[in-house]
Length: 415
Image (cartoon, rainbow, N blue to C red; front, side, top):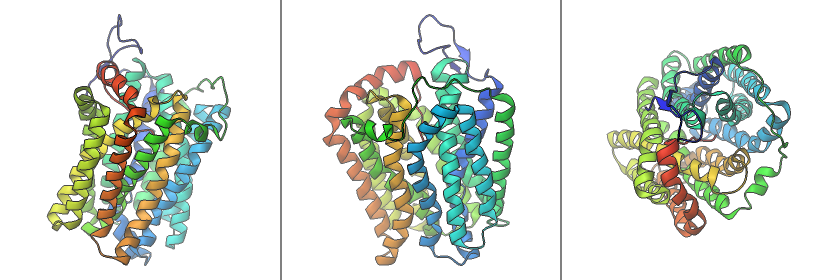
């Protein structure tokens, strides 16, 4: 990864500085962000173990994702409202505290219903933390916004890769241990942010609960959100349903999703910006969605080994999609970035909530292949929305080519 960035948003007449030379507050926030993103894929390798331990069906266990992301989606309307009133530091600490409490409670669950409920509380805490962390890092980082975004996206990639690995290592002994481990790590993050992060300036204007919804009145942002809705259905079919199809031990499943996360990180941070520079954002996004659809069909109908390979390969396509979608969402409208991000995430996280529940149900109604076919069709719909609405997105896509290739070079997965 690049290790230098300019000292401000203007790349001219400024000396490059190492992104590693950051205040302790930045490292504390970035470290907690790693753990926060780990929570998304933490349960992947242990889903079969949880189902066995709590005598639950795959569709019941998949509600762990549904409750988590449903609350996250709704919370997107709340995070800006809260942070613009109490400040970034207090919002981060509130989110961390909720994650610590509900992650620990998840480990004590005696039924799948309890665990689903505790994951919902976890989702609220994670939404408060993750949606605020980028703004805090940008405000505190040395080296300008490009350095801050690189640090944040590196935290995303590391967390998405290490979450399944931690889940496998601790979950091999008991499915409860990954939850306790996450609570302990987030408690450490809470202490570090308390010690090293000073209060951030509050926005000049307070955000209302309806601002993100009003932002979706912009045709370009609405188009990005609609396309991302279909894409996220495909994404989370892979994340939540594939572990049951692979039916591997926690260690083996953790290794598969660790490799998946590494490809996600590499293609999100390093590959996607270069492809955007060469081909343009919309072409990269459309092609990646079509390739993801093909990958899903092969995953659904291939052998066990083929399914493993396709799962890992999907990480590369998901990494590219995450980068392009987020760039478009943050820049296609004239809404403030936090508001645009909240509106965009409000829409797409509903698909992340729906896919983990619907995929096992579709299998029960049909066979094991059809959930992947439905996810592939969703990915194609995402590409169709991009194609049909390209005129609303073309201006931004053209701007992204030179701007992000020569100045930023990376983007962020707003979540």
